[in-house]
Length: 299
Image (cartoon, rainbow, N blue to C red):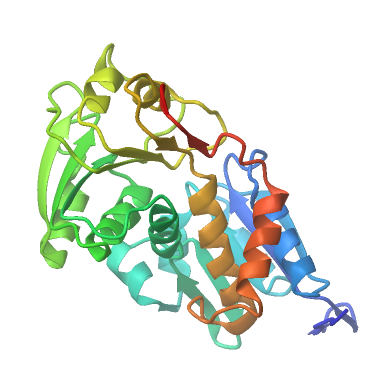
């Protein structure tokens, strides 16, 4: 088994590289299982653990991590503060204003957004190769990545549905730079215009107004819900009741993690991993995906 090591000056010894996932909450994260499976498949004796870190604790934690961590995966609510902490950023991070991956270098931290590539990969697995229009539920950091991903798949018209009027302002600004026409709406007044894909980025514990999930499902198409901790969700149940396909967030989590591993290993998420198909298979086997794709009634 190949072992990459790095110097630990404070310990006076060589240790295998260490990576972590940070966020709050973090206990539910499946990232450790995914990354550990990838490193094992690659023959690397790297470690990967989770750490609960909120926005207020992030600066201090990042300073301490510089002496012991090779790479960091960032989940909510840290993608904005991670963006600010990165000395250099890739194009997707710069476009979205969100960083979910930090890699330590001699000059500081390089920041990447692998959520965009992860969403594109899983939508292609679901048979979505080209779009003209789509819909996003939610307006946060993950929604910005969803907008970029949908645009890259060809969508030039996107409906954005949020809880409050004005909550889509950041997405509207981003869409203007991409040349995408955004139609904003709230959950109370969203229409059911047919769309081929709906990407849901709202928290699993968010309460939708009565009847909204069924109303949105009436637009048809595939539901891709980035949630995976609680499944099925009210949205996925509504899609299933319409005989439609819904998929949870494990696929996106898997594919963005593949690109994170490449960033940690090569310093560039776009570099293919050795035997990447085999690594992906090992990572997929490490997480439970029994409910990842839910066929609708009658399928």
